[in-house]
Length: 388
Image 1 (cartoon, rainbow, N blue to C red):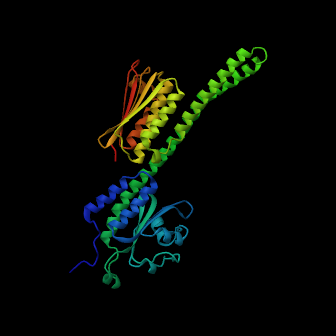
Image 2 (cartoon, rainbow, N blue to C red):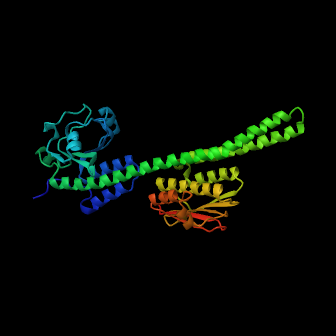
Image 3 (cartoon, rainbow, N blue to C red):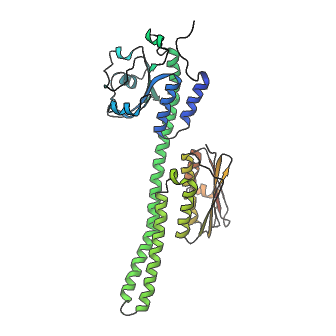
C-alpha cells in the first residue's frame, strides 16, 4: 500500500538539521521570522505558512507569510487581529490541528483576497511562560486524488516535528531580540561618547576661536600687524574644529558598508582621522573579500574604538591599522607607539578603555579579540573573525 502523502523534497534528520541551521545564521529579528516560516513550510510540505508576533493591543507587531505573493498580500489588507484560531494558539498556548479550519466554530472568516485554506496546523512559540509568537501551516500538499477524497492533511508526526521546530524557533527569536537590544544600547553608548568628544574637542576649539577673534577685533585699529596674526590663528583654529567635527560625524554615520565595503569605509575614516590629529594614522589591507554584514559592522566598530583609545589616551605619534585575510575570515590590527598600559592592572582597576565592549563585539560575531600592551611599549589590538 502506497503512502498517499507526497514526501518533502528533503526528509528526516537532514531536513530538520537544514531548517535549524538556517534559523541560527540570522541575527536580525525580521530575517529570523522569515527563515522560521520558510523552513516550516518546506519541512512539512505545506502550501502556506505564517508566523505572527503579538503586540500588547490585540494585534500583531509583526506578521510574516510564506506561499503568498506580494500582490496577494497587499490585496488581503491590514494585519489580522488576535481572534479565532490565532487567539486560541496565543492565549491557550496549545497546538491546533484541524482537518478543515473553515468548519471550526471559532473560525471567523477572512478577507476576499485571502487564499482558500482547509487543513490547518498551528503551534505557539514560547519562551518559558511567555508566548512570543504563533506559527501555523495550511494545506498539506498531496496528490490530486488524495485531496479529492478528503485525505492527506497534517498528521501527529507533523505536529511533533513542528513542535521541535517551534522550540528552536523560540531560541533563535529570543537571541535575535537580545542582539537587536544590545545593538541599540551600543549605538546609544556610542552617541554618548561622541557627544563627550564633541564637547571636549570641538567645543574647546570653538571657545578658543571666539577669544582669538575678539582679540583680533580689538587690535584692528591700534595694531594691524598683530591683528593679522590673530586672524591667521582664527583660520587655523577653524580648520582644526572642522576636522574634529568631520571625524566625529564619520564615526557617527560611517559610509554605508553595503555600498562601499569594509576596506573603503575603514580607509576613508583613517584618512579623516589622520588629518584631524597630530599623530600619523595609516591603513593597509591585503586579500580582503566581503564578510557577512554583522561581522563587517563589528570590525568597523572595534577599529573605531581602538583608534579612539590610541588617539585620545595613548599619546602616540604613529597609529597603524591593517586588515588582512586569514582563511575564510579576516584579522584587524590597530597598533600604536604610545605609552601603553598593563592590561591586567587596567582590568583590576575597572578602567577597561572600551576593551569589554570590543570583546563583546568580537564574541557576538564568533570572533576573538586579543590585547598586547606594556607600559612604554605601545599597544596592539587584534580582532579575528572567521568569515561566512
